[in-house]
Amino acid sequence: MYRIYTRTGDKGTTALFGGSRIDKDDIRVNAYGTVDELISQLGVCYASTRLTALRQDLHTIQKTLFVLGAELASDEKGLTRLKQRIGEEDIQALEQRIDRNMAQSGPLKEFVVPGKNLASAQLHVARTLARRLERLLIAMDRTLTLRDELKRYINRLSDALFSMARIEETTPDVCA
Image: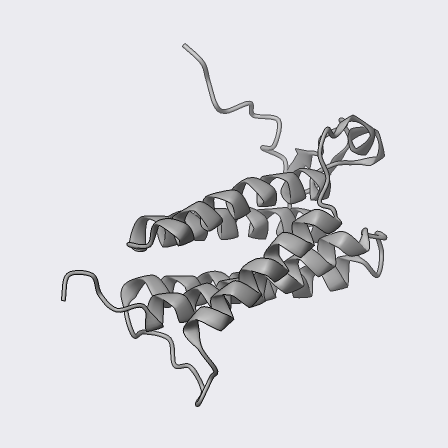
């Protein structure tokens, strides 16, 4: 039987991809832990939405966030072994989603108060997690230089999640 526990973290450290160990309360662990929270929240969003296009977008974003999380969880040796990295094409894909969604949902006429329906509220929770992650990346970048693409992707992601929430809020209920 396969065990999921290793006992190697019992003393408050964890291994990075590449082999080095850091404290579990290190900002890097906080950052990739927040990526994990965001991926999970996007799973809740996926399960909550009735819109096929949003489901596809959310699944793509989840997979991309695994790539981002792997980079954050890698030491220098691990970085050399990564097969994928967040790139300009990932940022452009988010910008295209944002533009498409905002054109479909129409102009904002007032502040958006989350909660029009469950799916939009869940997307707003995901948006706030993306904003928290962005703050962590900015703080992390003060001591560990991060690639600009990581920060830009997360900045766009919060906007993309807002635009997805707007789609949920403005798309008529198909059962009505």
